[in-house]
Length: 364
Image (cartoon, rainbow, N blue to C red; front, top):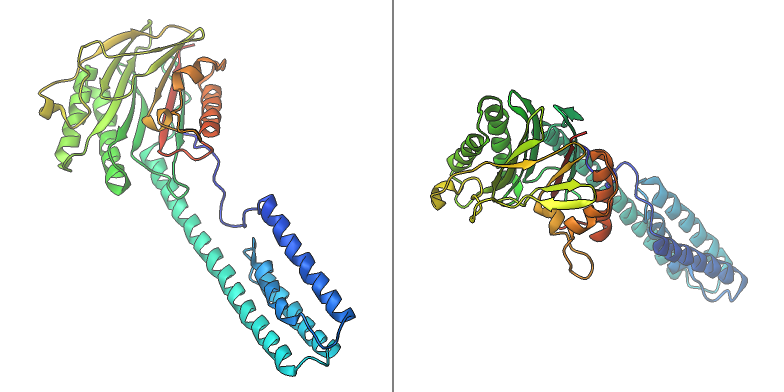
């Protein structure tokens, strides 16, 4: 698995945007101008109360407590200097300015310490989540059977590393078997369901000759959880180690796409009614069916979850996956998914609304 590297760690403060840097710089310039003007002008007026803003400005964009402390110390020295330079100003004004500088310095320093502590805790939580994701969504092999394979996982939230999307690629006695799925719901329950489904798939895919039977076992796994209305949409694919035929069992999932010579063909259900999602087979009185499709040399198969197709741009338009991927000339799965992820993030403003899993395999 290769998650998109768009998150930053918490060890260093992220750089301030240019507008923020401009405003902070302007504030510093005004403060310096005010001090210089105060020293050179009327000794019966002072700007010393404004020096309390110095530690606040210094605390912006830093995670080091010594920065606002140093700024507060400099501001306090300037208050003392201005007290001598402005003898006509009541001592109480300068005393109040000094106390205010000290108080604001303490507050700004405490805020920097609090933010840096919270970011360290968040970084530790992310590390634990990443370890959990590696255990749940294991890295897929680059080459399995006759296929070159690549996977990308995009988390919608900055704090999230594990969601309800799932995938797996296995070399089995029956060829290469793949699954991609999406658990209805979010949070820990969705992660637990995804873990159960993947565990069953990893075992059943190795021993069940019929891919539809594998789907039935996954359905039973979801039903045994007894989590009310919980279900999982999934697509199971089997690609033989020789020949051009492959099999699909579509459990209420989005149709996989076959990319062939610049054209994109979705694999639509062969039956009038699509098979139900995992966990709903008993309710519909249905079963799962296999359908064959051609995956010839040079073809690329793209599996995905609805986080890709439901990503919206600023105008609220859904991401046109079939249209966009048709114009991507990349032949290797790695290059294709890199291009697709970049395009998807550009479309959604770098903030997808839902988790998205993408799995591409190519028959060379």
